[in-house]
Amino acid sequence: MRQMIVHWSQHITQMAFLENGRLVEYAAERDQQQGLVGTYYKGRVMNVLPGMQAAFVDIGQKKNAFLYVDDVLHPHLEKQPEVKPSIETLLQPGQDIVVQVRKEPRGGKGARVTTHYTLPGRWMVYMPFAEYVGVSKKISREAERNRLKAIGERLRRKEEGLIMRTVSEDEPTEAVEGDLAFLRAQWDNITRRALEADAPALLHRDLSIVQRFIRDAFHPQTDELIVDSAEAAREATSFLDEMAPGAYKQVRQYTGAESIFTAYGVQEQLHKSFGHKITLEGGATLVWDETEALTVIDVNTAQYIGGHSLEETVTNTNLLAAEEIGRLIRLRDTGGIIVIDFIDMELEAHRRQVIARLEGVISRDRTKAHILGWTRLGLLEMTRKKARHDSAGFAPATCPCCGGSGKVGQWQE
Image (cartoon, rainbow, N blue to C red):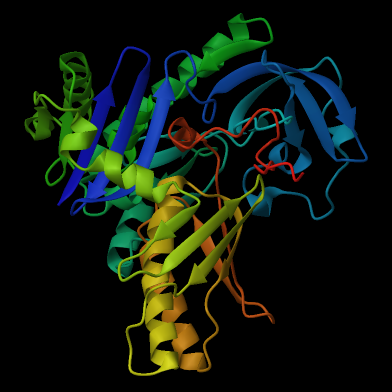
């Protein structure tokens, strides 16, 4: 059973997603602080840097956005020149350009933007200039992949590109066609506003976190949406009814005395899952250290003593840890380079089991992740894409005085 729990208050909306009662996704969004990913701007090129093959674009934010040369070339790799041109031949200072944010600003860096425009819908992702049709890799049936690709090729115009999403599997042509018509209208509105606006200007903003999740992952026929606000219930019902008429029956308003997150066990799971040290079932522990670009996870047997031999105990601990790490990476929205220090195992077959267990968990993650394998030191390397920072609404803030590096001690007389 999958449940989407939404806690709405005056200044913040929090969303938790449960699978059989276990928390697997969490996001928070404050009023007036909606994320920038997916947002379209009419920007102005401020600097072109040949040495970096990049340009800085004023989009009206505190920091200028970063536009790399690959994000200016044609979105279809086969349409790009064999020799990459200099950024100077593509952009000039003072030039107006429509860009889409692909990565949030973070630390001292501005947002990363692209001209590879995408508009996600319920059944597809629309790319106005990509000139190809793709099908989600998570659709495994070859006949269904061929059917969806044929539908996309028939519906798209010459310059357009479409990616058929996982949820489009077995959907009728009429549903896909309606989605495409809606996305084309959105793109026409963006281009019209771009002609009328003076740079820098906001042209289009992506949906709220709740609407995005409903659009991207909510299954109206099987999933349950529970909210603790009449206003949020009406908004979700209206959005669902536009997307899938009749699905409003799956929306329920919570009216209990205690907090909705407490009633459904979300608050307790959040506190356990976002700590520096996480205790697993049986007593094993994970120690989680996260920086801007690198996350290191250390697995320890701690109090876990199950198994008839040391190798069996170690393997069971690592398998349990792999299952939990896959869930926590998705829940904490951990991105960048991830290094996992599993407990050393003697047998290669056991190392393969650990990778298989981790792959099975991350295959359910909507964000792309890739396991690279074991290093010579016995560490497991993987990467995971991250564009948004929604879950920071719960994670504890870093101390502004020491940046998280301080220690508490006592003076010695």
